[in-house]
Length: 201
Ligand code: ATP
Ligand code: MG
Image (cartoon, rainbow, N blue to C red; front, side, top):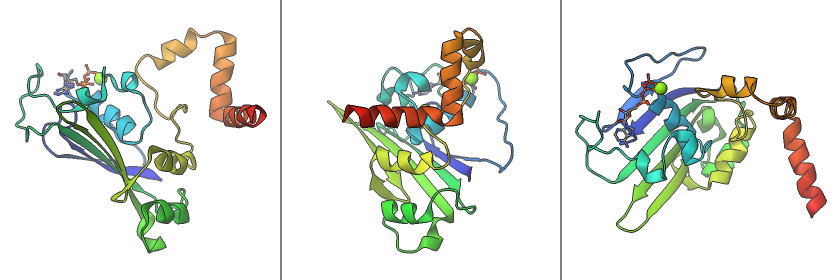
């Protein structure tokens, strides 16, 4: 399973719909400082529900919407107070359980799910904001997306994404904290958490 393509619309510095292709093995993104490389990573974390706003470098969710007033922003935008990110996954190896996708997305054909589209949208109104998730076009809850991605070991607590500064942070940790990371990566932490939940009940 791998990311095949991202579609960013009105997200951070991407004022118009932008498609970003990813290759199966290795993809690098290069560009000058401030050109939006990290914003691309932020978009993945946002769409897959993997980070709180701090993790995607925003005070609040609505800061993720393209703001033409931003110093470096010069693209034309639709002006809508809405942003969306689509992550298109290649699941032809079936790492994500097809039946579960079919169930959550409500599609009819199990063969339809070699390609999975996860989309998140944030919309701002005069006095509020709303966030929506979609799986293959159908509105779902974050937990549906999380349950699905967990099958591929992609979780909010996981270390699928190594952010700027993470390595230094790990070096500066206490041995106990470092051990917690190893538990997380080895998949032990998940069972510790489940055990704790069970004991509480
Ligand atoms: P570096 O090489 O320094 O790490 P980078 O390519 O990772 O740079 P980013 O951090 O992805 O750059 O992009 C930063 C740019 O995104 C800034 O110029 C900032 O103005 C712009 N930006 C962030 N949020 C928004 C927004 N909501 N609307 C418009 N532009 C935004
Ligand atoms: Mg950066």
